[in-house]
Amino acid sequence: MGEVLIGGMSALLISIFLGPQFIRFLRKQEFGQHIRDEGPREHHTKAGTPTMGGIIIFAGVLVPVLVLTDITRAPNAAVIGTMLACAAIGFADDWIKIVRKRSLGLSGRWKILWQAAIAVGLWYVATERAGLNEVVQMRFIDASIDLGYFFPVFIFLVLAGSTNGVNLTDGLDGLAAGCAAIVFMTYTFMTGNTNQGDLTLIAACLAGACIGFLWFNSFPAAIFMGDTGSLGLGGAIAALAVMTDTEMLLVLIGGIFVIEALSVAIQVFAFKTFRRRVFLMAPIHHDFEMRGWSETKIILRFWIVAAGLAATGFVLFLNPL
Image (cartoon, rainbow, N blue to C red):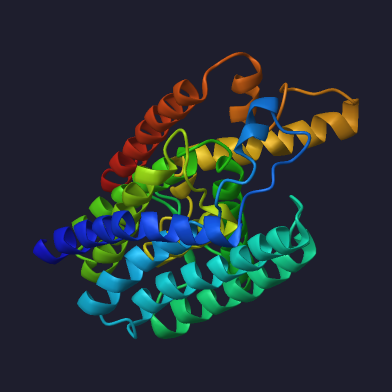
């Protein structure tokens, strides 16, 4: 338990220490965020805010993890490798936006292809190296389903859903980082309860790094995590879910990410089918903005909902129905 606390606090402090220097570097290089024209008008004032802050988060995670764990162990390699691979996709996306000075980066097709490749790698490590079977634990009702050959497809859906969910949530200052910290703290308790020591340490480091990043990312943000951060964090969440057999329970533990992604899917379906919008703007946090809620009010209430959903998931993890 001492190492877990040391790791989490180290990640937090490293993120806080690196923040000012990295922000100055990004400003000097003029690596700023480009804002979509169709987004809320209030967000246009955020144009030029330094982005790619996810690098701070992952630097904060890697230092204590490399010092305190054996990164070659399959579960550790699965989580850290998936995190870094997804972060690399996000970095390419951010870099294209900066170089081409636009809000559109890597094409959706390329993102899906690379995510599919990462999912195959995660499946291989989980089943061939970590010894996990291809059975999905329902958790909600203490039941399981043997997916067999469809298990890699299932892992891809978990990975794509998690990365895109975090990415869509990253639309308000500190919203995604705060919700991600809640998810990682939940996984810290869950893996601690099942004596998965290294995963407990990694989850604690991820939580600590996200909290440290919030020092600069909270409203009004001095830096954004960018797709580098959101895709990397989403990848880490997905890998933790796979390595702990909690893929189905992730619907609750990462409930805010699910709600954000569903709001976009509903909006797109309704508009293409009925030519009507369900929300004033999607993802759903923008709908509340359009209704006059302040940014801080939305963020705090979403954090509360995220904590409630994660707590419910943790209870079901301990006591399935």
